Length: 470
Ligand SMILES: *[C@@H]1O[C@H](CO)[C@@H](O)[C@H](O)[C@H]1NC(C)=O
Ligand SMILES: *[C@@H]1O[C@H](CO)[C@@H](O)[C@H](O)[C@H]1NC(C)=O
Image (tube, rainbow, N blue to C red; front, side, top):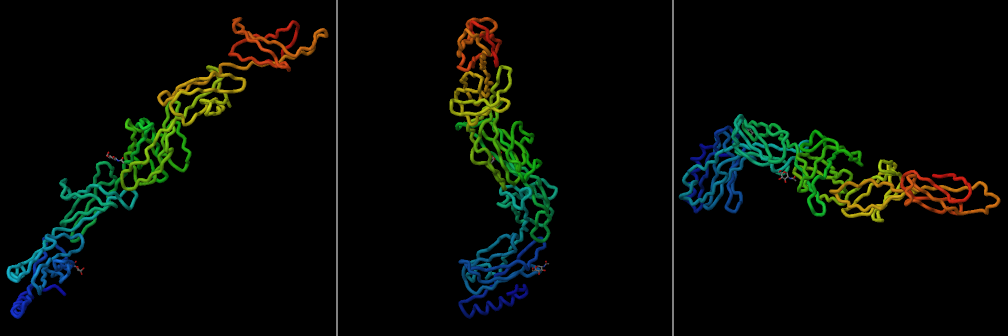
């Protein structure tokens, strides 16, 4: 049914009065205006009459020129008159309850029921940088262009959409803000004319805060470094972390590019201030002067979407790696291929420069022993703890001095001898440190001695030659 023209009202009323006289049924018209101070298209608005229980009884459009509407009623009772405008258009009221008694109600008395237009909607989006969606919870305010008074405020919905309602035609500015997240684009404009309007451009969140924590033996751990990598995000887009390279760290995965690092605080927490949406990998790295701690997990992948992120699980400092060196003298050279044992359990070999590395050690007192042919080392007892990171050089305290006695010719009168007594004495003639040994059946002998200059003698009553002294 089309909208009734205002001029038709008198006719309808005359008709209703005529009918009412003949029966219990009444016919009254419930009419009024959709009013607006600004230009709106009245033909887009519908007025609907529902019963108390929500059944649609009647519906009509408004007159395009002045917003007039008229709905005929054939029964007494309770009804609800509703305005149903296009989505985003606001009116006051949005519905009116009518109790039609045929005597005192507004319809019977011929009063107007008016709906007043209060504004259009303004829609927009807050997006995560480089994404087609955005975060919930960003505050967005609307101001008249050039003013710094907020006329409306709202927050974004999941996905980043926001809307203002009851906005009358005009020029506006929109500002977005968040207590933690940094915005790359924080303002835009919108012009409202005769329908719902859209923000001229999206607002952009540059990044989100991401944090995690690290513990050791249940206690918060300070000073653990966390290196951040990504194959999709670039250095320029991350904020609030140290982008300088890390000494002594070697990445095992070349596909990841290093972005930056942060260090855990007193309470064991670490945080990246602003990371754009994307995929990341974090690798813990904890190194004292000589000790590298083993932190588990040793790497963790995470995804930043449209929100702050708490990295799970908590990192744990498991044990630590200790490096040391085996030397052939106090200022000596590294001893390659020596075997270093820790508590007779863990065994490692030294590298060409004499260095070695013991992994996943926990705090405790250990006996360390080094072994290498022809070299002698004292067994060292040492307390290893994260706060006493120095593992002293393991220095050879003795060397094998070996030789062989070879007698080219025995005098005819002497019978063949197969064992000789050999002595070795420091040149400084300190008698207390005289070493004595016997050769084996082939004439070979060895001494264990500290470094120094010695005289070696074979106790014989005749002449002989020593060969192959080493
Ligand atoms: C009002 O809306 C109707 C229905 O969509 C349309 O046909 C008409 O052109 C509109 N009038 C104006 C002035 O925009
Ligand atoms: C992000 O920062 C806010 C404010 O500093 C803080 O309350 C929140 O815990 C942080 N969230 C994460 C996951 O780091």
